[in-house]
Image (cartoon, rainbow, N blue to C red; front, side):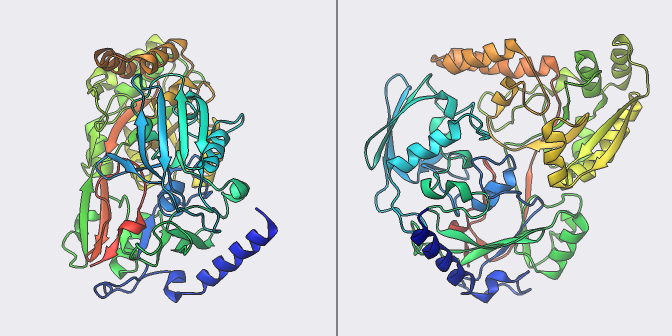
Length: 505
């Protein structure tokens, strides 16, 4: 970014930071705002993002703060899962599904005043596909783009290696956000986007505050002056904040306590669906977890329905592969490995494993992990597996288990249609299957609807047969919202909080 532009941007951010005093507040007033108020709501997330760049960071919490608010994509994913235009006002697909031409919305500007054009889109996509990129959608989206053409400043033509009916959806995920070419290097700390808001304050370990971005698209149309994302992961602290009325929206509220607040006249409880896959991830680089019999034993040891009742208060659906009930073509495969501790012990003996088998179980700082860790340890113990619980901070989880340093970890993968992670042997659980990679390639190249349906079923069965991980639950999303705050989602096809669509009634 040129020095003059950078100075202007910093001055603008500083001015915004000083505007509404409420933006920097730690909490909201106990009473709801007056009708039509623009007071920034306080939203509670259990995990604090380690970065503000959703195009490179692995944590879904990054997108929860910035996606659609600060950074925007060519398309927008609605609460229903449908796709509409955002930075792209329209698009056409060729007959074979391997070509897309997108027409950009004109008059859109980044927060520093520079215009959005097709060159910015090309830069963003080439950056995501570059060697060394850590973009989570690289295999699913960007590696499939064979060529990017920019016929004019407001047109982008994508040529794909193979047809992808999910392309408009993928372009609406945070991983495909359009970034400012001159400031991409500062995205992790100070993102410059086209969204209606910008980051005006970041307090590590506490909160991130968004304020209006005057230069941005639709800045005058949004009704709230911003939002405060408050990071509280301990259930007792979240409960105390709810009792005190200092938070307006609790995302993924600890389900074991939410029933106590359903009669609270200040709040309403929303129960919705998600694309999450909650699982006990297993490190296949370590013996004896590299033996499929041991992985099957671990899966047989877990009572999925019991886990959902005890750890999630019943708010979830049992799953048996890395797919969610919201995915078209989902198969119910949880019955492939019914809860059977004796069968689990027999499989361990068959694999030559002496019991008790001692393994570590790493737990990220999410409510489902803290409530579910002891439940899993109990189930595993009945099958002859002793799990040592390790409670980690999010940074410790990212630098440990996510880097392959673990035996087992309880984690919820929230990204939709992310099965291509199993084609990457370098991914943190180390699954290396040429057969699965071939199957995924056949599915990607298939064009007939019937063939695609059959291959999609085979993808699910293949992962389940290999017991790559012990899949347990697809979580329902429990959101507690202050009455009067409108526009919050109930269902989450992606993890994002669109502040610009919210208002006080």
